[in-house]
Amino acid sequence: MKNEIREIYTCDYCEKYYKSKRFAELHEKRCHKNPDNSRVCFDCDHLRKVDVEYYSDIYHGETSRMLKVFYCNELDIYLYPPIVEHKGGSDFDFGDKCNEPMKKNCDKFKEQTYE
Image (cartoon, rainbow, N blue to C red; front, side):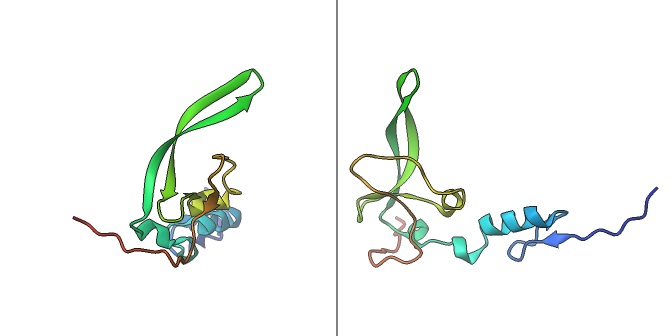
């Protein structure tokens, strides 16, 4: 049996453990408890999750599929969450409507009402 001493890395936000510094850094960037990932959109009454038919052109013709995406009724735009933003953003083109990252602050924010 070997007796090794190894460094353990911990997420500053959720205290998850990692053997690799690289994986710990990747996790911290995407961690749900990271305050940099909180967006007002998640608590806004204008945000909806909608089904959209998305058309794409592939080498043997056009294809379509249904996507569940976030949509802001007030700003009239599609939004993608921080986890997609960390992966390089969304490459979906919805035609005449913008597809943007969720905003950290928004002047159109309206608190959700639960009935």
